[in-house]
Length: 251
Image 1 (cartoon, rainbow, N blue to C red):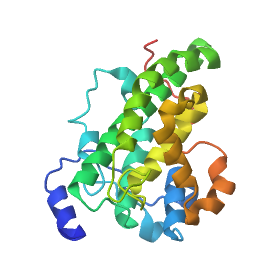
Image 2 (image 1 turned 45 degrees about the vertical axis):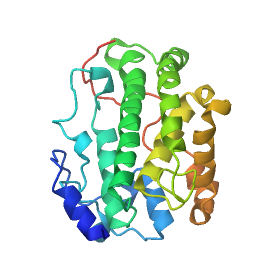
Image 3 (image 1 turned 90 degrees about the vertical axis):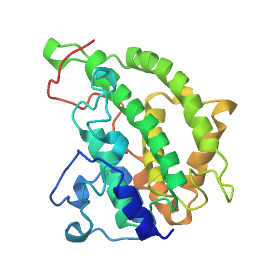
Image 4 (image 1 turned 135 degrees about the vertical axis):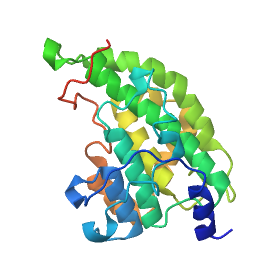
């Protein structure tokens, strides 16, 4: 099946809900999107490349109908994680970085789902459980890391298994030797999570994730990126309080 037919078949099965419109300037893009543009060798033009975050971009698992809002600790507090996940999917279409088969797309979405909930758990832990500006509760970095480490030790083995799944031809990336949008998204999320709780990523049991990091950082078109922009700051979420508006308190 060619890529156009595959996209048409896939689009017909989805039920989008998350929409963002309007131009996005380069400086407003998250670092993960800038990394995708660098890999693709594209000079960003907001008139041409601003993602169309509507039914062509929203993963089915990320729609309102699919999310269970009862679990407040994994819900996106301010919409930024959701926006950046949708944005990466849209850029995947624009830059021709989508998986070529349905099986590969399903695999990408399974990893996306795990990372989405982990990123929101981290955000929740940092901004709502361990910090509350209205109650003058200062951020307790060690307490936040210790609590979140328990979650990472439960979920990271699953991510290692998912990344280690055999590809044809063999590769340390998600679907094969050529990266797709989900590789960039996974790198961004795992980088931010590792920055927050680095000790969880140590040890031989995390070899698939370690090899995944190495493969991404050794991509020829990204070596310069990782020597400069790629090694400073967060890709999606910082390991410190970043939400200044009050959106409930459920400590």
